[in-house]
Image (cartoon, rainbow, N blue to C red; front, side, top):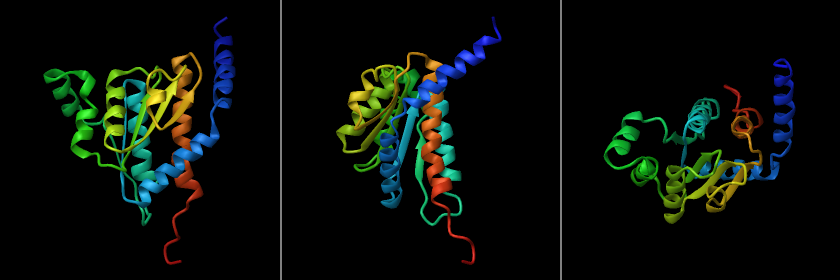
Length: 193
């Protein structure tokens, strides 16, 4: 019956949410707080739905977690420059679209966040490998068994679920946990206070 599908999806999603390792989310918050305080850059990337999550996260951190604050996030989604991505894809290869951008911008001590439901996207793997090779702090958001990406990152936030939709749902929830920590738990000082 079609009407039972939403309830099944909801029940499976709630189980997926329960699997979130909150200690690792807290660790990610600490890494990003340190990056902000040290004026480090943060880069985020992914493909497809994960590209949208990367862009959404960068937007939330640039505006929601920074507006009206003395200390602001220096974050960019490597997914957002379509001309750059298509130029590298056409002229060099899709595997390098994120790593090559990091070669322009990333410095040791910066943070690179890679999102991949499968954990096996070659361009995301190349980005994390490059980031690690120059001394960036690396965070992965993966699904299923973490794929190849999980073990490459210093911190792996894994949605251990086989369903891509629920993996992507959990990734967005984790990103909101992080963003809204900075928006809600770290309130900016009141004007005139």
